[in-house]
Length: 230
Image (cartoon, rainbow, N blue to C red; front, side, top):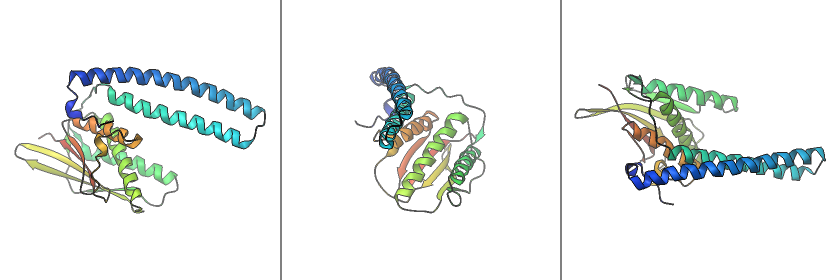
């Protein structure tokens, strides 16, 4: 399947396809819920009958697979739905990111990881923008988790470094967030459905673009730009 680029979202045919996809995904999730119900019932029967451990393990893997598939379908459904931004007054993007990073570092500490998983290198003053704080925070979380995976794939045990800055071009001011993933691969995970991580990043990019910004992978970084208020 070719990537679905957000720049074509206004095309009526793609909008109709998106609505149809959401309904199909909804129906598929209902079928998966039925399969999970039967699998859970079967596991309980096996547990009562003291069946071999490998049989119980197989049922457990089946249920886990159903859960993963349902989660992926939820992501596709979210991507297919029109975004309804609830923008708030000037919000400091830097503070939104700090909250996201603090939560991820806390989760990493609970998983016995050593040190902070993510370090923010912020040279910029407050980066004020009119944003939907909830959707933006969720998108920054998805990008941070995606960047962590890309960094670990490089067998790098150090923390993920995130840099904030501001750029001015004529009358336009932008806040820039860079996640350093240490590679120069051309694959663009922000506009791809190659896997669960890419779907999640594509949804994050859709939110960023709905705010008038952009998301890209370039020169060893995942980079987000968001328009700032004057």
